[in-house]
Each structure stands twice: as C-alpha cells, then as structure tokens.
Image (cartoon, rainbow, N blue to C red; front, side, top):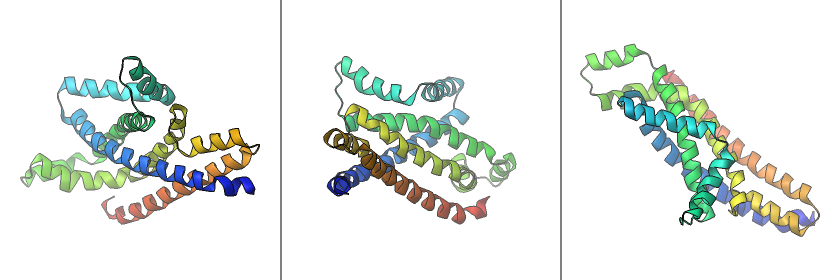
Amino acid sequence: MHVAELYIGSIAIGALKDFILTVVSTLVSLILGILFAALRLYGNFIIKAVIGWYVEIIRGLPAILQLFIIFFGLNQIGIRLSPLTAGLIWLVAYGSGYAVEIFRSGIMDVADGQREAAAALGLNWWTMMRKVVMPQAFAVMLPALTSFVVLQLKNTTMLYLVGYADIMYQARLGTDATDAPGVLYLMSAIAYLVMSLIIGIVGNRMEKRVAAYR
C-alpha cells in the first residue's frame, strides 16, 4: 500500500500526459487522414500511388521500429528530437496511415446514388462531401474511429523506450527503486483501462447521436 501511495501521483501525471498526447496526435492524424483519403480517391495516379505506398509502409513495418527510426535514425544524421517531439511525429505518422483507410472505406461505403443525386442538384464537390457524403460516412466510420483512438492511446506505452516520461516510464522508475513491480504495473494497467473506458463511452454516445445517418 505504501508503494501505491508513493507513486500514485507520478502515475496520474503520466496518465494525463499520455491522454493529452493521444488527443493531440489523434486530431492531427485525422486531419491528415481525411486529406490523404480524399487524394487517394480523387487524386491523379501518381498521388494515389505515393499515398498507397505510404499506407503500406506504415502498416507493414513494426510500430516500435518506426519509432526507433524517427528517434535514433534522425539523431544519426544530426536531427536531434526530444522524446516528446519524436513520439508525437511517430504517432501522427502512424495514425494518419491508419486513418487514411478508415476514411477511404467510409467514403466508399456511401452509395454512388447519393453522389449522383447531389450532382443532379448542382452541388459542387466540396459541398457534396461536406453535406452529403461525410455525414453518412462518419456514421459508418465511428466505431472504427473509436477503436483507432484507443489504439493511439495504447501506442503511447512505447514512448518510454525513448525516454518520454509517461505512465510506463514512471512505473519503470518505481520498479527500479522498489521491490513491488506488480503493484506499479497494476496501477498503470488501471490507468490505461480507465482512459480506454472513457474513450469508449464518448464513442458510444456519439454513435447514438449519428445513428440517424446510417
């Protein structure tokens, strides 16, 4: 019990840092994901090929290897990044690669008749996407987007390997200083579980609100 009381503050601070990093990286990833998905669907063949290869590289390489390439690889060529900066860059690069496919699948799931009807009404491409396609696509994508946010949260657990002071980093420090690793990692697990449940609850409420668009 003494160990839990001693490190609960550090674990809580680490959890807050992980949560903020998850939110920021997810928002940027989703913005890039929408852009890349639109380019992959409607761009020329060169743009489609480049984005396609980007997605395959992100999905094909082990996540931890991507992080190490960014942090240690760039350091080798004189680009020194802090653990936070390297972690954020990796989370955005990794996340946008997955977000592309989520958005692309959601957009393609909207029936062609919807686009044809919008065109018949004289809507331009931007208005059609904003008012017709994306509301319907978002309703379809929301479960996948919720899972994606949880995945981003879980990915933050790897950042302690490059020195980012998150939950796992604090737990590791406590493990080195005490003989109670089980208690510290259990506290870490509870923190991640609580954050995942919060994300799931928010996602479920949003699903109910957009159910009318299905």
